Length: 238
Image (cartoon, rainbow, N blue to C red):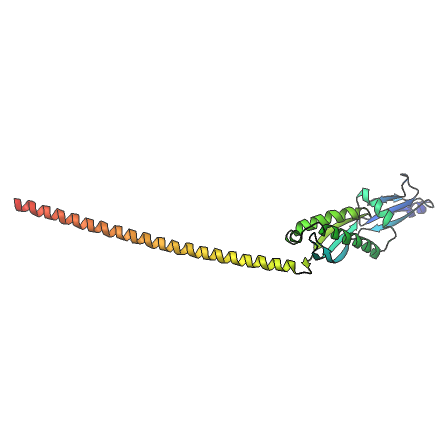
């Protein structure tokens, strides 16, 4: 009897979700447990595990239409996993239990492809290219909501590149590069002009100082000559 009891007592490791299905106290079709342990009644209950190992998914999205109907390529890598949120685990038990890893990956991939196209269609291509953080945030919000419906969660998003088939982004990049070069040339010319003005002002100040010094010296010499003449005149009068 003791052996039978322990054989039906299932422990749930931290990297799995224990799904007990059949007759449950709550009246639901299944009971999900992350961590801990539970007794599984024979005949009226059975159990399976859901693996929480992160699932990397390559999303080579090409030709998604932006708001201006310009086709955009956004190859990306997403990482998803089965959610341990109590309100979402039941969805995983209902929709993912019994599926192979490849099937779970394909399901998530279809959701991600669809949400990426939806988000890109609402954004201008300039915003897609200039603000990658906003793009990732909006895609994450859309994808996360849809993944929760099937019991998954979004772990990470990495958009590898953003290009377009028409060369529009490349033209924008060249324009920005030319503008930056022109601004740098203008700044260099302004700095050079300011430097030349500074040198000229310094030379002018030096000339003024020299002239003032020379004028002061001449004035001193003239004053000395006057005093000598006055002294000579006084001696002659005596």
